[in-house]
Image 1 (cartoon, one colour):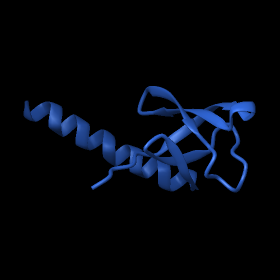
Image 2 (cartoon, one colour; image 1 turned 135 degrees about the vertical axis):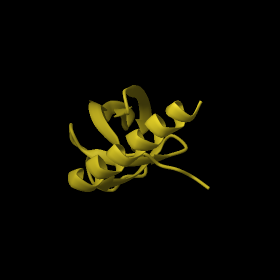
Image 3 (cartoon, rainbow, N blue to C red; image 1 turned 30 degrees about the horizontal axis):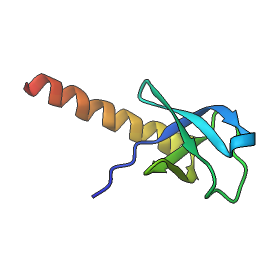
Image 4 (cartoon, rainbow, N blue to C red; image 1 turned 90 degrees about the vertical axis):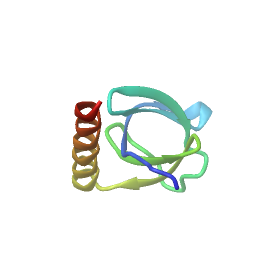
Length: 79
């Protein structure tokens, strides 16, 4: 099973066909080779094995991130 947390585009690297995304405070560079539409700063995307798979709605992304934050907090409290 694959769990994809929405990530926000924070840097564009058009010459490399890649973007830097931030996922719950962690930044990483990923490929945008598979995207048919251009990405912009602030877009929310889903990543799979280092590739942007699709762009998602900001409202849906923020809701998902909030749920993931709750999961992380509950797991930390259970330790």
